[in-house]
Image 1 (tube, rainbow, N blue to C red):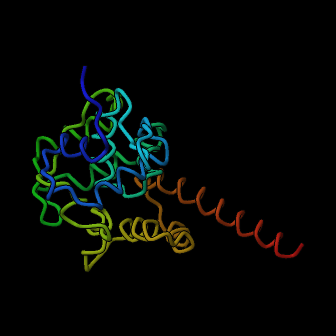
Image 2 (image 1 turned 60 degrees about the vertical axis):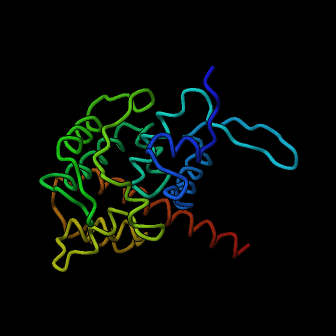
Image 3 (image 1 turned 45 degrees about the vertical axis):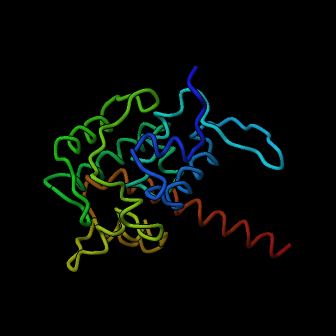
Length: 219
């Protein structure tokens, strides 16, 4: 019988990290995916505390989720890649544009063959729950870049002459839905259509929520 693994133990095993190599940031990323329900765990009560163990069959889910989280910092977006086909296809397009023709990203070396296989798997019907994605990174970006900088944002922000599509994506990542919606109105590009639909929906929901808050204030 295989012994159960805690989240830190599982991460160390999956990515061949020693104790010193396992940063709190990476553990926190994993725990955010536990909290949103993507990663299933089991609790065991011990003296004065509870210990969380990965549920059976979750090691591969954790592995794939952390690889995806290297690119997409929002845990909700990572979960949506697992559960929503349209979101997965949208994110596959982003990954392709980031990896295509690159040997490194923000100083992190990439395996070109693994990056290509990663992109194809995400764009296809690859089973994220039972099969492990190819790892294109020489070191996980969560470890290399730290807690306050994610790979996609860093890549977009480093460009001095950012193009309109990158400006749109950067505004979205910064949470500025008003700016993102304004940028959409000046763009006519089929390639950003999935992102357009997502931003318009998010902006509409944000406006509706603000209206609801205003109604409460006026009661």
